Length: 251
Image 1 (cartoon, one colour):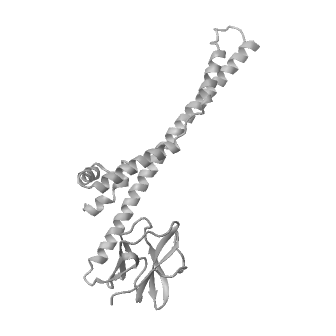
Image 2 (cartoon, one colour):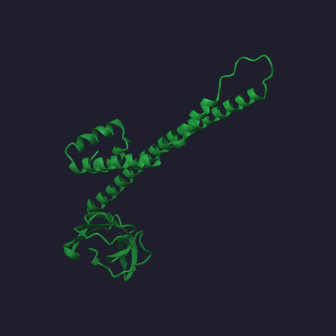
Image 3 (cartoon, helix red, strand yellow):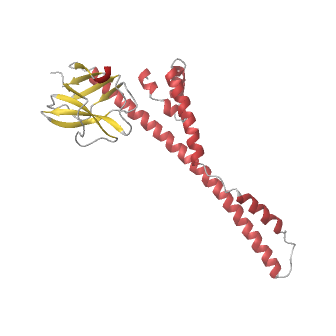
């Protein structure tokens, strides 16, 4: 397991979704990684708040209603004759109380079961997110380490820099941004391949990160360049704004 892999396990560790071996390896790594330690603490606090948000408690008046019913129900004495009307009313009240108690137990069990299911789903989500991150990391590394990888770097706006790495043998490209300003709220940077003047979507960048390596979506094919635009969250089918950067791909 590499150091890059361990950085992606903060979510799974916070939700206790790692195996014993994975947890031990991550804890040894986190002992010297302040960023991972901080992220685990923040994720753990968030998970705790989310757990409280989805837990269900019985209504406050339920306890009082049960206690009031208890004071009106008396234990039936042994009978040898069919019960009269008064006894039938007492039995009915006892049955009603039993139903209330059963309802309270079921409500508590449902709340506990719902919370447990939520925690299991979150753990599964964390594992899947970690696997997806690992696959993306491997894909980026594969392009960067390709024998035929070629690089082109350009200065972007506000002192940022962009580097595009292309491997023709893998028909793939990676864009590496450094120091990019965050896009406006509700917006995202979208990457494009330039196919002879026609822009083809190549994926989105993380709006919360100023430095990032992104495996561009789709094949390089015959693209001669790439561009970056600011688009609504989720991206666009075609550019809707002027490009913030245009770069030629290395030959």
